Image 1 (cartoon, rainbow, N blue to C red):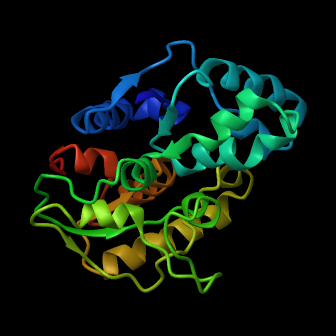
Image 2: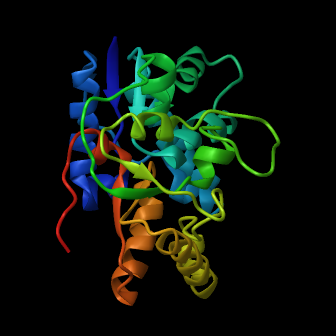
Length: 251
């Protein structure tokens, strides 16, 4: 399977090891991974602010770059959802290249569990952890169950995480609550965003967690800043880093 790795902007600029860990993880499963060097943003920031005319050429360029692969894998639920659920308006209903790309683009944990049938990752992570489920992953990709729908769903991230040796996954009071990031929402509604983020962090801290783990580095970036400023006894890690065997960094 020829797979293209799509790396979101904020991971490329601020958290490159998440992309490297994703690559390592896929290659360990025997996947041939390609990294198209001319890839750019998927257009989500412009779309979120209503700039549809500016998003359209970015979406068309994205499809042109990535449509030649068997699958596209992204370590981000929100960017994956942008392609799968919000690109339709920029393409004709019979555009075969777009339809192929839309139907073969996957979030990392989704790809491992649903396409490669991976249920176990060899490794150790001897820490007490808690899972933050991002809104896009839950509500648009259905990577786990959420309280709005009484539909049982497997938690893709949890399946992989709990297969590691030594890990203790702690229960939260509110498992599917938004962290308040929301991209441009965190800028335009700063006070509300901060309040939501602090509330979310306190749930993890109250559970006794050492590490908050998520599949979206955007959510973790938002909460990491709040954690550092308020000196909460908690660290954050992307699931790709954990599954690839990265150690927890010393505070």
